[in-house]
Image (cartoon, rainbow, N blue to C red; front, side):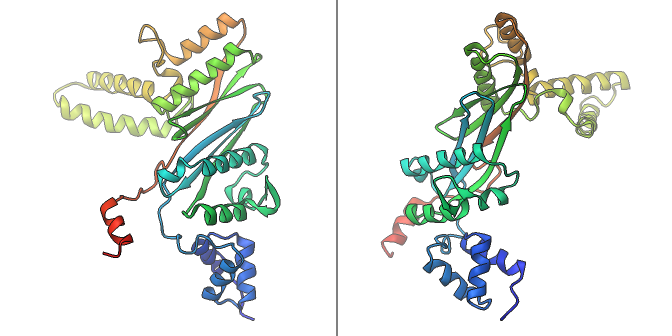
Length: 311
């Protein structure tokens, strides 16, 4: 019997979308013959992605779910090829179940998550259940990422924008879970969805990032004012750094609902805490946007119709 290597298993997995153990079994059953292994998996209903492996799945949905006590939250991104499928009720229900799986998981990697027993049928893994869903829906689907927050000293809140285009989890440090605090968390999550901060606060910003920005901005300042002295140039750079921090740091951003158009998110949270008579602080956030950073397929509707008509 041919030796089955990890590289062979990986290649078959990428080609078919089947689970690692299923791919290994298929290769063992077919003495390492890749083409026969693909057929073996298709016959078992585990390679629904075989003809779809090269398609781009950059649409889809982000979903979030919270525990009843708001102590735990999970967020997932599940991709599809088309926005049409993303609006399909069956797909939406499936994504909601993936989110529930993420809420219950103890896995820290996507690979381990995909190997878990599926929440609706423990005889299947998450990956096998995905293959079955692909067979039903008829498009390439992918569970791209998940994250789970477990709060030990506060609550987790959530916000979904655009029917699942953007999802956010926000963790608050607080002793309270009353309606006003949860509403505050939701508003901060809404802020995060809208203005896409990179950090919670300036303390999270890596010093090397700041130094790099200073170098870039100093070069810009010298080009703009070549005759200016070092003090003026430094002042220009620090002013621009401060402005940039207000854009990329959540707590420094202008709160989107600020009545005066000036109040920062940090000040808004302080105001809520004072009114509620308790301490409230934003500990962190997770923001997923569907297809973020992925290449998206350029649709040509006329060409697609012509192909279907055999022209």
